[in-house]
Image 1 (spheres, rainbow, N blue to C red):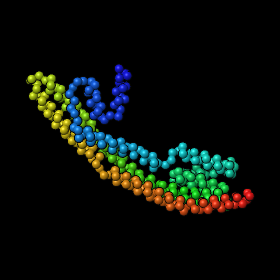
Image 2: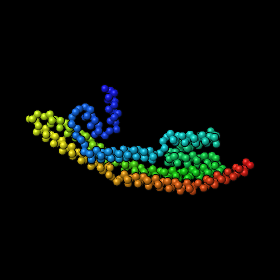
Image 3: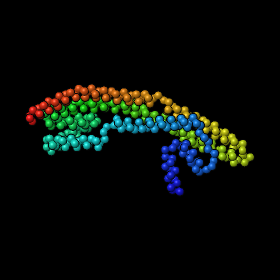
Length: 284
């Protein structure tokens, strides 16, 4: 019996509430089961696809726009401290790391900002008169600007995509879910009324028939309401508008980042070419 219970639990995990009710009735009794309208079932499948897609997109986009987690930041700090200890000694490394931790509390925390801070700090340790120090200073300065653009993008995506899509889940989808539960409940009530009518004695047949008619009217009403709410989710143009805003924010970020890096690339390349020429000349 326990094995059968586990089996039915696993089978119904991803089913709709109505499929679960139907399976339950068929497994536990021989009572007549009221069929859901074909249009309702088809709409429910479309609605479920939209609902799950919305949930996944909101969850993933929240992660995309969130600051790096503590593990990422700590890893960068550890690598930075190790590098500075090799360059300037343990005491200098500890002092720079302490300043780095203090600075983190007031500076925006993106991966780009973390890379910028590390690059600028190391450039000071190496010295701006050194090719590597000069290159890291330029790189860090640009990465800081890229980080600022990333923050603009994340704020825009959060305000114009995450928040409105989450609001849809909390309002429209929640209403549709409740309506689907009402359909399941009304269907079971109708099934029970039909069963009672079939087994009713002649003296109670009229009352039982009226109960069936009342249950049928209620079932039709809640099905129509659930379809209206699910259709409002499936056919709404709002998700497309929010997706367009998402794309626009990403496009603006990548355009700005590309422009900044396009200006930086030839400067770094020039330093690299000069250093390679000097290195080959000195090591002939």
